[in-house]
Length: 476
Image (cartoon, rainbow, N blue to C red; front, side, top):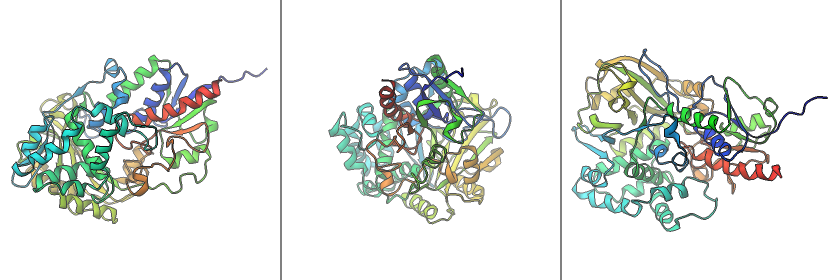
């Protein structure tokens, strides 16, 4: 008699931070879970590799984790026991200007306010004051589906919504001078959408509040430490991980009560046989990323930039807005807005002694096949003269390379979905439970679901809760 295969409680497809978090949330509640990953390593957008020269350890995608250290999902797990250690730069972020000055985003509200100038310091303090000391509750309320239940602190969430749902250009109208506007514009630009877009103010405010609550840290040894810690905890809870296992259809997987996809909506529909279920889902612009091996630290003219873990290179809100508009109109910007990270200032172990790693990206249209290296380095030279002289090696990745590294990044979209229109608030499609699909046993947990991009695990955490209800019902 043929043996009937044992039914698992859950199968997770994709071993990125969200998939691993979903698996952990179920395994720690006593459910049988297995994870299947197409690549030969786990991590998704949080990997660490030697991309340039031996001994230089780079993060191919996410490197700085303001929403990771403050994630309700991660904070509820004993990840430090599995090797995750957060390291803090002296300043979370600096935003330099051509005259050598800079605005900063510091852990201290006062230090941040002072860097914005006398005329805007008080305005900044009043902007953030209603949220000080409330990050943990606010994060739980805002890092979930819009229609999922009643908030824990409705008053604070309503204040956040009033300030953040309008475009960041509206938020910036409160300020009189350029430095504050540039800081908020640069934070909003992380979602690669024009600054006039709805809820871009919320993105800016989230990054600001995260800095004041927990900082913008990196993980010791590289971002790979985050999925490695999740995987270690998962295995201790009885979960299993299979790598080098590409899933093309549900029949490739063992029987399970729930299938949770840490993939793009497009891939889920293809694998689960859901046809055109997500045909209206839109993917957004991409990035052009360069990882550098340097012979010394970046020679910023701004003293604050030389102490910051992250440096935004704009310089003005108008410049940032122009670069984003170019990308959305299908052209690469002549002067791209840059998000840069200098991890070896805080974690020297990532490079040979005296050497440094550096990470920079500008934005490019979805699927763009050009080369932005000269434009990126011209921007860097404006604020760090002599930068090119320090370059020992570089590894570039435009939209095609980003998509090849991570199948979730359709056309190179590192946010796994456009931050625009109704999709801004109700992604991947309007549903009360955005992690559920038309198939009762199939769920989505990637960054295509709320709260969206970033290494915070909350998409996986929320999807696991939805799948848990399904598993309990079918167990009966």
